[in-house]
Image 1 (cartoon, rainbow, N blue to C red):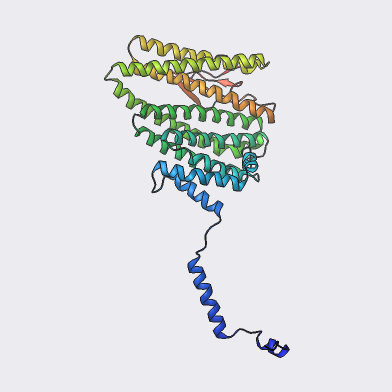
Image 2 (cartoon, rainbow, N blue to C red):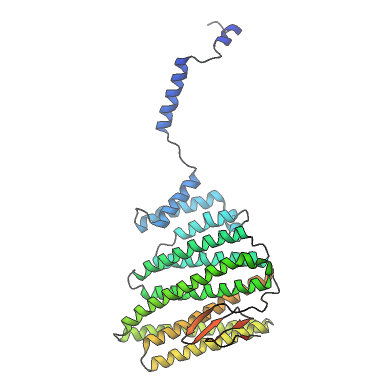
Length: 375
């Protein structure tokens, strides 16, 4: 075979029409046999979402299928990156990993109505904590505020949906009432902290205002939903019987445990030289104790549904107190002056005529009486 000379090479610089068509046919055949696929980590996230939503698969199979995919996603992202992302705030580089990888993986592993409702509530609290941390550092922009509002709307909608499922799941009515009651208390605590931040960091007032308004709306929704479920339980309780008494007794034990936690919290703050916070918590403990005693009185007279409601109110007040105390402790690391004096905007209902409001160390409200300073 003779080697090509320069003239021959020039003639072969251009493909013939037959060669063009041959290449096109080969490419088409190859594409048909090898359809394009998204990168593995994106496909794994899609599997996770399908498993999380339970689409077209049984719960057990969806969980098993996602377990491997979830692990693969974390491997792809990297354990170190995934761990570091847990503390990321909106606007920071790793926040996308936190909400689109870590939380999707964790959410997909919640496979019962109870765990799904709890996870949605946890995400709602997490978004509020992020807003509080940014506000304390005076870094909450209007744009980030809008993003947080959108995410809160998403998680609260998810929570309400899962609680509705819970109420229909077996004998889940009591669990649904407890979930709504817990959400009401925690949202109340966050609303009061956010209001206090508008006073402590005035520059954040405009960015926080719509978040506060949204949280107050969700508190009212949780309260109405809880009242509706409680009314349903009261109708059942009208039939009387040992099960109703047993349920009230169980709630009594939970209320007493909550009271002890609040008392212990007051002692810890006093030992930590936080006299103002200790006094505020001690006053809350007195209100919780009052609700417990009222519940016990209802038990003695056989008013079991009212006893249950009183005990649940005590638990709500204790939960609000614990939540506010934990948030305040974290915010003081960023903003030592927190909290300053703030006006109560919302209270958690402990019992008829008794409510607890205002962030710890500021003010409290009882049944419409004048607000009084807690020092």
